[in-house]
Length: 194
Image 1 (cartoon, rainbow, N blue to C red):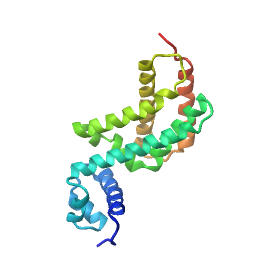
Image 2: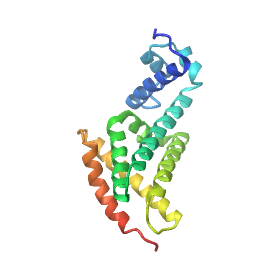
Image 3: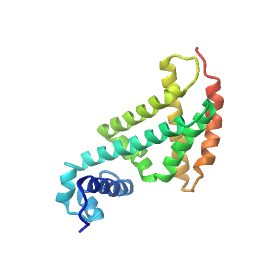
Image 4: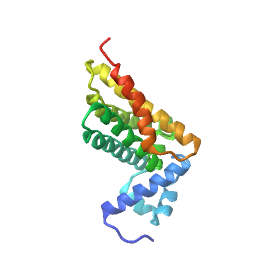
């Protein structure tokens, strides 16, 4: 049995354990017993914090998404110009994908996309990410165009990360960020009103 923790500390511990188990086994292959066993608690303790496996998974999606958006917002707010905002944003994204592999898998793995409720949660996170990026696009374009470009940038980062993770090789998030930011910055400088 795990040591007695405060309710918030126990909830955080359960979320961290569940993240690892879900990332390894997927939503459908994971049971609440698996998570309780991995956390060293009884199933009733787990149910004191989460009414269902679905509620737990949705809470994880929200938490992981919030960490990603926070990392992007913090990184881009520290930049002094558009080019450094672009590179800082990609660096934050690739560091998140590199350092929080389980979080990235949970958010962008196929398991979250096959279930409509989970897919809706991920779309909300992607929209929040794009909304955080859109105001940083310093081009004389309409808001709708700005949002489209912001979604394109998030898709670019996700696609590159999927490729890198599929190779199974370790990657340097700072190097990848510079490479992708160079491409994105070149494209952003060409963005204009149609």
